[in-house]
Image (cartoon, rainbow, N blue to C red; front, side, top):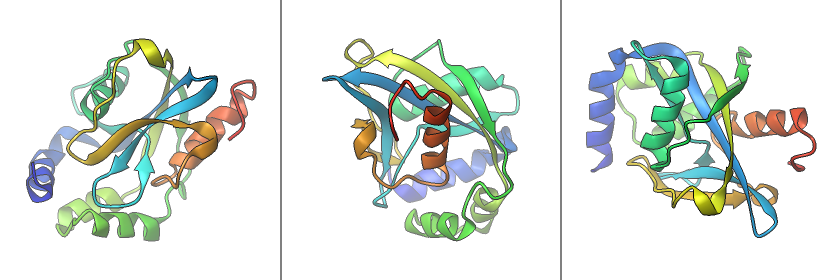
Length: 177
């Protein structure tokens, strides 16, 4: 599916989402004695991010996190748990956000307005056994979906580095980030 079709489909269905609310999933596990986190690489930019997305108007937030994770990675983890809600007014650098939107080819005013609004996101966590959870697959917006060693995490979109940092700060026995 090409980018224009994906963006067009998203724009036509944008009214089904709760405005300004999202979920981001921190999926962590060990492989080869190394702590890893599941990340998606965006198709049109050299940027990575946590699997995240939006909540439907008629959907419980916990179910939204499960759905988003399945849609974005192909994996199902029914034991996702909320670990923090990120509501800082300045949680996203808007210049960075606009640059990402441009790289993705978002020219629609309504899509730019949607993504430029303030978002409050709830972080969800699932510690997993990487060998038992299946192979993650990227969605239509991503070129890759991989288990990345925590000590080698690349530049992340939006405030995803802060989300990971906050998780590890609250759970110092997990690893350094």
